[in-house]
Image 1 (cartoon, one colour):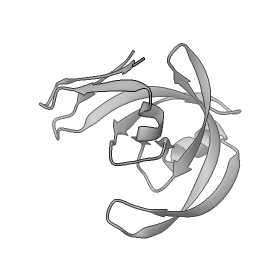
Image 2: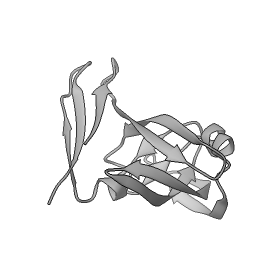
Image 3: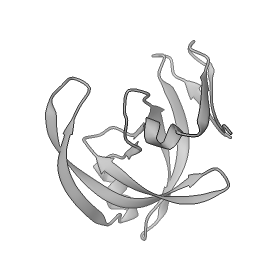
Image 4: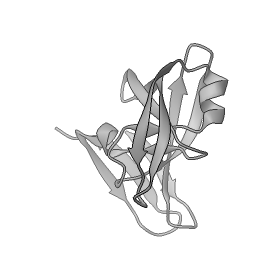
Length: 122
């Protein structure tokens, strides 16, 4: 189970452990159910972990704008072990998207200080 908290601004946040060939880091990520991808990491984390560049492309953001993005190879501590993931880098944000939530139940208490729980779902 992954646990987090709802911030004062009513944003659900969980802390995830991410690693690359250079290091491991704990990253606070916003749970974004409107994001269909897996993971977005800020360039500062990509650089600190030494994540290898995989590919580039264009993504359509929530506001409808298209933006150039890069994908990086990372590993994410998810459940009982580490899983490979392609992490996008699009500005300073850290987001967890629906691709990683597949097969899981997300429970959010929507008030500031409320709990956030991600649990495997059969």
